[in-house]
Image (cartoon, rainbow, N blue to C red; front, side, top):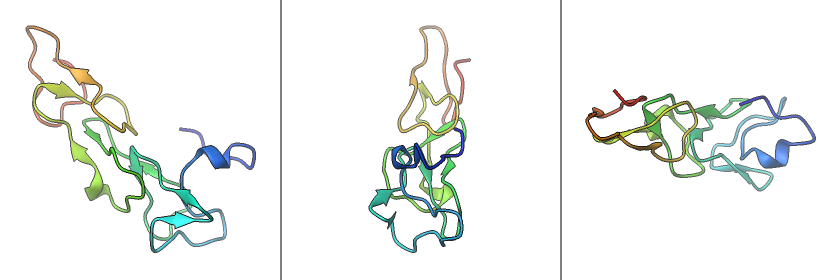
Length: 101
């Protein structure tokens, strides 16, 4: 995801703006950290869960808030707020699988 600028910052959930420390709680100026990622204290931008993991909740603070994709489903790409889907017939996706294979 590209870094937000002043024109689209409201579309990105809470994270610290440059020069302003990240929140110790879940928000800054009424913005909430996005689902699919987390906002560490002191960070300037949200970080997103890696492929194979997702985060359905807003306002999370650590990489440990990212959940491994459940067996039988896959989570492709980074920043997913949910699973990408079920594995195709004839395939099995292990826990934390980022692709169908």
